[in-house]
Amino acid sequence: MLSVRHLVPALILAALLFSCAPASTSEQPFAGPNPWPDIRQERITTLLPAAMEQAGVDAWAILCRSNNNDPLARHVGCENAVAPAVFYFEKRGAEVYSIVFTPPGEATALIEIGLHDSVAVAGPGSPGSLAEAALYITRNQPRTLALNFSDQLEIADGISHSQYRQFTGLLPESMWSRVVSSENLVYHWLSVKLPAEVEIMRRAAELTSQWQYEVYATVVPGVTTDRDVADFLKARMRDAGVTDAWAPDQNPAVNSGPDRGHAHPTDRIIRAGDVIQIDFGIRVYDTWVTDIQRFAYVLHPGETEPPAEIQRYWEVAREGNRRALAAMRPGVTGIEVDRVQREWMRENGSMEVRWNTGHPVGYVAHDIGPSLGGAQRNRTPHATAFMELQPGNMFAFDGFYMWEIEGGTKTISVEEMAVVTETGAEYLIAPQEDLILIRSR
Image 1 (cartoon, rainbow, N blue to C red):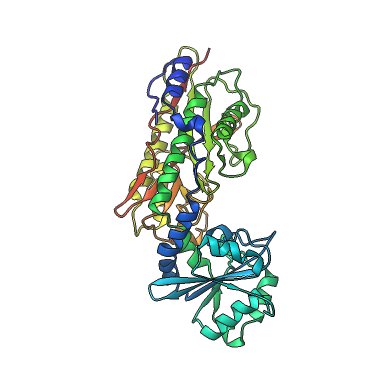
Image 2 (image 1 turned 120 degrees about the vertical axis):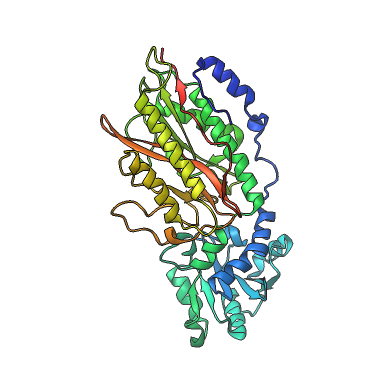
């Protein structure tokens, strides 16, 4: 990644950025065979047994159907379900054995894909896939049966009320007390990413950052608007064949004025003295996402560097990000990481920032895992803030500094991505070291 330490003319900078951009940018670098099927298989084989063990779950049933499918469908292989089916996982020693109870219409594809150990087809005379699954569970009597209902974890809350009533009604009363939420299982399973997934996200992060440097090189103060910046990045996404990491109308969030939080870019014209924020993420292979911010300062005519106070705000925010990274290691809780950053902010005169220091990132921008938050004043921490970090957790996290400006507040939020390792944590890509400087006419 290019770090802009000194002011250079916009045209030279643009030429430099385009010359060092990955050659694959125009070749759609993520357009090849999708690695998700193989990675999904590996995740089921290598990570699911440990997740079930950690959650104390012996069996897990996911009810799948068309039109209003379970949000975990792609993770377990039932994204193409039409008629109701049950995807069932049971612990057998140190391994997990999977059975799909399916009607005939989907059986051929499921057998050919080969993701699951067994496919049980509900043929003529069968009471149906749900009844077949319930009969199997009744015969085997697992000590605990997890279903996808949850008060805390949205992605583990996929079973509808009617599905729950129907399926548990097929089980004997002796099983009802053994039915538990899948939230702990899903948390432990999805919060850890495989090395292959980390590498995919590393490549995606490089593009996410590179395009932000490119667009800053095109900004003409007094002419370019926040929306123009967003349109440039949207064009880059279309050319590369990638999609939005979150809601398209708020990705990227571009803001050269007072804080707007999570919001869409406007037609505000960028001008001298502005601190510009770009919050941007892409989705690759329709599976993995990034979330990175890059900041720039627009010089006044005659300026060669930012005012001392802006430079200090940047340096404090950058150091907060570095301190948060240094605090990340296996066994540390999310709230401890957040507290390190907030103590630094308070020591250096920042206003209180309501946003968490960071959040898990992976399959969605705000993914499953420990929350790097909870140390804000007058705020009750989320339960996941007390969860311990473990190797394979991935985060997007900020270094903050907030101050008052005309019309509200302004926040520098130095957002980078990192992965937790066996001994600490490391950035996915080189972080932004210096404010990008934009010359005024």
